[in-house]
Image (cartoon, rainbow over all chains, first blue to last red; front, side):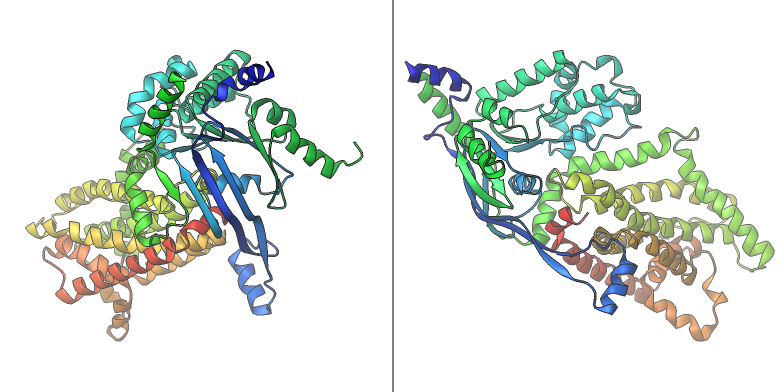
Amino acid sequence: MSLLIESEISAASATSGEDAEVVVRLTDASVEYRAPRERIRSFKEYAIRLLQGRVEHEEFKALREVSLEIREGEVFGIIGHNGAGKSTLLKIVSRVMKPTRGRVWVKGRVAPLLELGAGFHPELSGRENVFLNGTLLGYTHAEMEARFDEIVDFAELWDFVDAPLRTYSTGMAVRLGFAVATATRPDILIIDEVLAVGDEQFQEKCTARMKGFRQSGTTILLVTHNSSVVVRMCDRAAWLDHGQLRAVGDPQTVIDQYHQAYHPAI
Amino acid sequence: MAARSNSATARSRKSEEKPIYDSAERRLPLIEELRELARYRDLLVQLIARNIKTRYKRSALGILWTMLNPLLMMVVLTFVFSAVFRFQTTHYAAYALAGLSLWNFFAQTTTGAMSELIWGGSLMNRIYLPRAIFAFTALGTGLVNLLLSLVPLFAIMIVTGVPIRPAILILPLPIILTAMFALGVALILSRVAAYFADVMEMYQILLMAWMYLTPVIYPKEIIPESYRWLFNLNPMYHLLEIFRAPLYVGWFAGVKTMAAAAVASILTLAFGWWYFSRKADELAYRI
C-alpha cells in the first residue's frame, strides 16, 4: 500500500531511479583559481603594486573534489550557504567553467534557466530579440524560425512583437525570456533559484511546461535557498559546504543534516 | 511494464544523438575555439546585425550617417591641412578619406572587441559562449562599416577627379590583411581588458598617438627623409600603403610593402589567437 502511494508521488519522475542512465558525472571535480588577495581592477594599480612587490595571490577553492552522479529524469536539488560552491557546480555542468582538476562528464543538451532575458537589447524589437536571445542560447537561426510562432504564442505577445523592447513592461520581457529559454525541451535544465515569472496565470503555464519537461525525461538541477522547495520538488539533494560535498541523498535527510549543522539547538 | 520498456527504447534511440561533453578531453584550445565559433555562426550574424541596427535606429539619418561621418571629417581635415598648414598635396581629400576609412576600421574593431567582451562578461558567467565571438563581432561590424564608407570615398574620387583604375580590384587583399591584423590586436587587448578595466582608456590614448605617428591624414613626405625609415616598423603604415596605392596612385604598392604587411598581419593574428585561446576558459571568472 505504501509502495503505491510512493509511486503516485513520484509519478512525475517515472524515468528516474536506480536503473536510469547517468547523465551528469563529476569525478573529483575541483575548481580553484589564483586571484589577487584584493581585487585589482586597474592596470596602473597593478603595475605600481607589482613594483612595490605588494601583489599577493590567494588560492581560492570554489569546489573541492566533488564526486556526484545525477541520473536521467531526476530533479536534483543543491543547497548550501552563499559561497558554498553551488553556482560553481552549475557552471562546470553547463560548461561556463572548466574544473581545474577532476572531470565533468555530461550527456545531452544543457539549458540554463537563469536571468531570463539577459542579452535582450532595448532598442531591438521583440522579434529581433527572440532571434538574438535564441542564438545566444546556442540555437541556430533556422531552429528559432521554426519555433518563433510558438514562442510568441506562449509569451502572449503578438500585439507587441514588433515594438522595441524598451516599451515592454518587466513582466512582458520576462515572459518572452522564459518562452525563448524553454522553446525546446532540454535534456538537462539548470535552475538557479526558482523564478516567479509574470502573473499567476502565466506562472501556472510555466509550471505546466516544467512538469511536461520532467515527464518527458528532462533532468533538472536546482539551486535554491528555500528548503521547502527542495523537499517538495526534488528526488534527491546535495549539500555543499565551503566547496565540499557534505551529504547526498533523500532531500529531507539532507535538509535535516544541513539544519543540524547550522542550528544544532533546534 | 510494456510502457516502461517502450520508453526505454525510445530513450536509447534518442540518446544516440545526444551531445556528450567531457572536460577530460584535452583538445587544443586553438582549434576548439574555432570549432565552437563555427557552431555559433548564427549568433555572430545576430550580434553584428544588432550593432548595425541599434547604431542607426534612433538617428533620423539612419545608415547615411556612416557615410556622412567620414565626409564631414574629411571636410574639416581638408580645410586644416590645405588652408592652415598649406600642404601641396594633390587630391588631398581622396588621400585623407582613404586613410581614415581604413584607420577607422582598425580603431573600431580593436576598441569594439573590448567593449563587446565587457558587455558579454555577465552573459559568459551564466551561459556557455565561445569567448572569441566578441572579437569577431567587432571585426564583422567594422567590416560592414568599412564597406559602407567606400561609397562616399568613390563619390569623392569621382567629384575631385581622381581616376578610378582597374588596380582597385586588389582592394580585398589589403582589407583582408587589415582585418587579420585588427583581429590579432583585438584578441590580445580583449584578454588584457578582461583583467584590467582601465586598459580600454589607456588604449584610446595609445590609439590616438599611433594615428598621428602613422601617415593617415598627412602625407608621409612631411616627415624628414632621415626619420622616414621608422614607418617601416609600423604595420599600419604598410597596410595603409597597400590600401591607398590602388586608389590614390592607381597602381599597386611595392612587393616589399605587401610582403611586410602580410607578414605583420599573419604573425599578429597567430600570436593573438594563441594568446587569447589558451586562457579563454579563464575569462569567464575574470570579467
